[in-house]
Image (cartoon, rainbow, N blue to C red; front, side, top):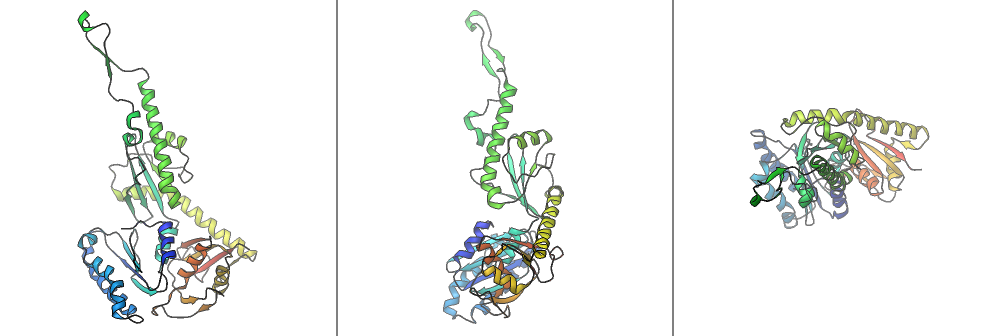
Length: 383
C-alpha cells in the first residue's frame, strides 16, 4: 500500500500521462461487511473498462485494467481494508491508498488523475497525529474526527530508549565492587553508583530529544499535521521542554493510553485537537471575507479559474461534497461545460485545486456548512 502524503499527491500530478484511471469506493474494516467490498470493486472495474473502451481499443485497454483485476483477486488485501479505497493507475504507475474515511463510489478515465478525494483527506483541517510516549517506548497514530489508526514510524524514529541510546544507556542494574579482598575475609559488597537517578533522568531527556527530532523530521514536517502528546503527566513537562516541534499541541493527553480501547483513545484525541481545528476554520473564513471586501477575493468560478491560471490564487477553499463537471482551458482559464461521464472530463474543482497547488497556493477542502459561499469555491488572491 502507499502512504498518502503531499509528496505522493504531487507525484501523481507530475507523473500523469493519459489515459489516467481513477477508482474510489467506500470499504469496511470488519467481517461480515467487508465481504461485499471485492464484489463492488469488480463492478466498478467493469464501469472503468466501459469508459476506457469509448476511446481505446481492447488491446490498449487490457494492460491498463490488469492491475485492477489483480487487486480484485487479492483476498488478503480485502481482509485488511479501512473506510475507503483509492486506486490510481496509468502508464506503468499504480498507487493504492487505504483511507480513514468513506469516499463516494466513482470511476474516472481522463487526461489527469482524479485527486480531489485524496486532496480532501490531505487538506482537511481535522487531521492530526498522536505520539504515545513513555520512558521505554513510543507509538505513532494518525487520525481525524472519525478514525484513529496506528501507523508505522519511519525507520529512523527510535521505537524504544534502547534504540535511541544504545550503549550509552545507563545500566539499570546495581554494580558490584569489593572492599578489601575476598582473600582477606571480606565479601563482595553490592551498591548503586552515585547519582544513578540523575543518570536515568538524563537518559530520559536524551531519549525524548531523539524522539522529538526524528518525529519532526520524518512525520510532522512532511505532513504538517498537529501532533498530540499522549503520556503520563510527569513526562509532558520534560518533553515540551526539550521539544523543537512547532506542530506539537500545547494541551495533550495526560494519562497512560497503552491499554485504552482505540475508540476511546480517538475521542480523547479529537477533544484535544478540536479547539484548534475550529480556530483554523474561523481564521480561513475571516481571511476570505476580508480579502473579498478589498476586491482581493472572489467566489465567482470564472474569475477564480482565470486567477488560478495566472498564478494569482494564494488560498483556495473548495467545498468537499461539490462536483462541477467541465474543462479548464490551460491558457485562458476559460471554462467549457461537459458531463462527467465523458472519458476526458474530470471535476473542475479538482483541476482548480491542482493548478493552485502547483503554483504554490494553499488548497483547503472544507465541509459545505463551513464554506462561506454557495458556489463551491472561495479564493483569496495574491494581487
